[in-house]
Every structure is written in structure tokens, then in C-alpha cells.
Length: 531
Image (cartoon, rainbow, N blue to C red):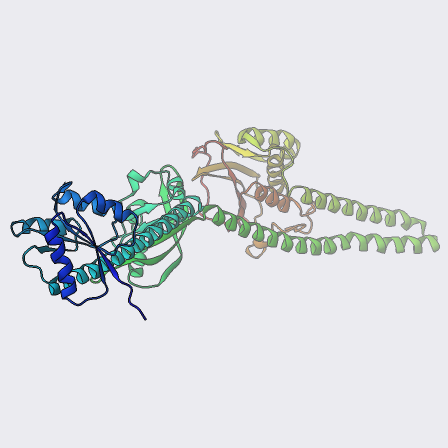
């Protein structure tokens, strides 16, 4: 297989030097070098333009070019070709400068022989080839770096977009738990700005006084552990109390030979509304369970208490039929009277059931009502009953305003006062005291009497529907059950204290004024706790 010749372009204005160069190549016995000679730089540029040259051997002192300018023009025309510079004995420094400017080698005239010439040309060709390969490899690496940089920029922008749009608050912390960056949701949640946050410790921002969160976050560094569902109560002047659900994970963002840079990603979600909803759900479930229990008791009570009048009516109806058949006319009126008594009792019970069912909801719109006005209206309505019982009524001078259903609260007082007159001790004058106390946003009222009182084992039953403390009582036993239902519908509590033979006090609470809770302490003492 033939070897492709290496074409050398010699640029030399001295014919003698050009002939020596040709002889040196022949002397070296290298047949694959083919020499072309020109004596002007302009001729060389023209020849290089047509291509098919492998290496340039040039003198730096030419008629149309002196010094390094010629080398620059050659490189401009054929940058990929190796160049060997010929210099005179006194121009060695110029040859060194030529190499610095891009030439592959230089040779000093007078010190050139065939062997050194061929060696210089071969080394120059190989050196240029390596330079070109390195340049291409470097260009390839630079393009890879640029592409990777573009990818990182895209990833960075994508992550920034995620951080900006994700609804949860995101923080990046360093090993000292100092905030390095945060997303928009964080600034919106905490109503702050980057200038007030970046560089601050997370404990200072979140008010982690007991350092529990800091302890957990510190534990994560250097591990792949995660922190999940850590609840923190955050208090601020602007937001009030908020409940945050916090999660975190350690991240190694850079690895070097001697050092690892670690960061930590913290995710915070405001669960205040969810917690409130869960609390409300639990409250509603509790109310539903209580309502179900109440309905069960209610159904049992109705079936039990309505059976009595029905049995009475049925019994005397049979007696009436028998008396009519036996023509005992003198007993007919007695039978009819007993039937009418049973019917009357049934009507009262049904009325009590209907009333009890209605008071589970507030009929009239709630409003701010001076409680003393409700008392005065009740006393006017019951004036006849109070007078006939010869009761002495004591009412506190001042009362707070309450947020309540005026008509229903009148029912409460009417029932309580009627109970006092119904169960009075006939051996002594009846005394009824109406008072109140306001404390910690809660108004506590009481109605106290010196009646017959209630035995201890009966206290737990007094608020049951149709329960009557005394069998000879004329009432249906629905009164206190209705009172309890009305008070609880207002969000209040009710309880009783009593001692047989000494009297009874019934306490109940109501929400104070809707805008401000009055703190009037007059009107007598209130109990420490409900029974």
C-alpha cells in the first residue's frame, strides 16, 4: 500500500537556503516528504488557499513580511496547519516568541541537517494534531458544560416555580438551622419579608421556646431520616394562634474530597382550620350521640308516662259500659269524671311533650337583653300565683345584659318560680331569692327558695322529662326538663343544690353581652362548680 506524501510548503526568499532544505530532505532518505517552494508570503497565502498542504516551513524575514506578522497571516489562512519557523543565529528569541504565538517549532539556520529537519517536521505535525484534538475535546467539554449548565438552570427555574406555587411553606436550612431560602407561601403565611427572615434561626422565627423542633431538626443532619407530623403552636400579634404541621428531610447538596455541604428542607402546612373543623366535628358527633340518647330516653318516657292516663281512661270506660248495662246510673257520673280526668292528664302530658320538643331550638332571634327586664316580666305574669302562695321575692338590684332569646328565658324564670311555689314548705313563709354573678365571660344566675327541698337520691332525676318530686304534685314534671333544654340551647349549663327540709337553689349560666361581657358582681354568691 502506497504512503500518502507529506506536502511541505517552504517560504524562503534565499534560493540557496531553499536548495539546502531540499537537499536535507533528500539526505534524510525520507521519500514521503514533497517540498514546494515560494519566496514571497503573498505567494504562500495564495497557495494555502488552494489547500492540499500538510505543513509550513517559513522564514520570518521575507521581502513582503518581517517578523511575526507573517506567522499571524499564515495562521489566519490555515489555522489547522502546523508551522515550523526558520530563524537566523541571532534571532533565537524571535523563534521562541513564534512558538508562544502558535508555531509548533523553530530551527536556526546553520544548525539544520536532514535528521533534525525531519524530526522537527514530524514533531510539529504530531504536536499540531494533538493540539487540534485537544481543542476539539475542549470545545466538546465546553459544550457539555454549557448544556449541563442550561439543564441546571432549567431545573433551578423548575424548582423555583414549584417552591413559588406550592401551597405549603418551604424553608431551606443550613447546619446551624439558619434560614437560607423560603418560598412565597412562607412569607404570606407569616406575613414577613425575605430581609427579615433570611439569615435568622428557625427557632426565632417560629417562637420554638422549648427547642423541641430544633432538637428534631438537628437530629436529621447526616442521616436520611425524616421528620413527619410535628405539630407546633405558633403565636403572633398579626395572626393570633396558628397550628403548624411540620415535616423535614436532610439533603447533601455537594460532595467534595474533605467536606460535605448539608442542607435541610422543611415543609410547613397550616392546619389551624383543619384542627378547628376536627374539633367542631367531634362536638357535633358528641351532640348527635347525646341527641340519640335523649331521643331514646324521650321515647321511653313518653311510652311510659302516656300509658298511665290511657290505662285510666280504658279502665273507667269499661266500668262505664258495665254500669250502663247494669243500670247503675248513680255511678255513671263518677265514671265519666274519671275518664275526663284521664283525658285532661293526657292533654297536659301532650302539651308538655310538644313544649319540650319545641324548646330544642331558639324560636325568637337572640338579642342583647337586660336580664332584669326578663325578671320583671315574669314577676308580673306570675303575680297572682305569687300572691296566693304569700311568697316573699328578693331580687338583686343590678343584673347584666345577656345574649339570649327573651321569650324562652322568660319561660325559664316562670318555671323556676312556679316550682318554688309548688314545692313550698307550708309550715313557714315562702322566700324566693333571684340573683346572679358574672365571671370569666360567663354569667351565673340562681333562683333560691326555702321550700321542702329534695332528697339526695332524687337530685339526679329532677331534670328528667315528666319527673315529679312529689306524687301529689299538680304538674306534669316537664318544667325542669324544659328549663334545662332552653339553657343548653343557649350554650349554658344548669345544676341544682338542695337539702331536704331546708330549700333548693338552681343555678344556670348564660353567655354575656355579645360585644362585651359585663362583670357586675352583685346579686349574691354563685357555686364553685356544677353538680
